[in-house]
Amino acid sequence: MVAFASDVVSVPHAVSNDSARVALQWIRKLPDEAWQPVNLRSKDRSRIKFSAQRFYGEAESWDTRVPPELLALGEEAVEAARAKAPDAPWDVFNIDTLVLNRYPKGKGVGKHHDPPKWVPLVVGVTLYDDPHNSPVNAMEFAHQRDSLVVPTPHRSAYAFHGSAYWGATHARRPCSAKQKGNVYSLTFRAFA
Image (cartoon, rainbow, N blue to C red; front, top):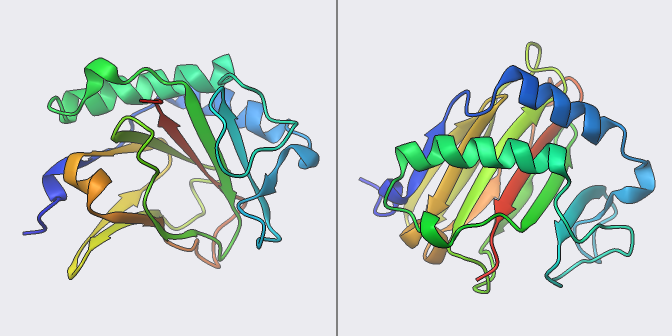
């Protein structure tokens, strides 16, 4: 048994088809210059952050509030995740930050910890440009010798908190070479 597994939940079909469609339409209308590198060493323009909180990798073009179309998606996912993880710190979790990543074929995010200035709870939603013709991507959580792979199909959500937040790293596995279009990861957070 993986020590932190009880602090990670997966919720298939966490958001409706309509919510996913509205969010994808909004995302696809973004101008290319809105997307920025993940960090100073990266050449990929694959991330957008929406937050009133200043943190690593800001760009002047990023808004300080989560857009309503994406906030509605996040709130829907939060309710689905809350039903599966009632012991998470929901009472202090009010979405104020969204990190939006797009992953073309072969791309993912390496293992990392989130900074301690956030409520120790993250809710992620995964959307696919072409969910019918793309292999399912996954998140991976690891601590020492323990690891847990969480498949992230289209419209699914995952949430992690507690020991999975503080003790484990998390990563998005690289997307398949057979993927059609992009995979989008929307991670919702609350500032502590």
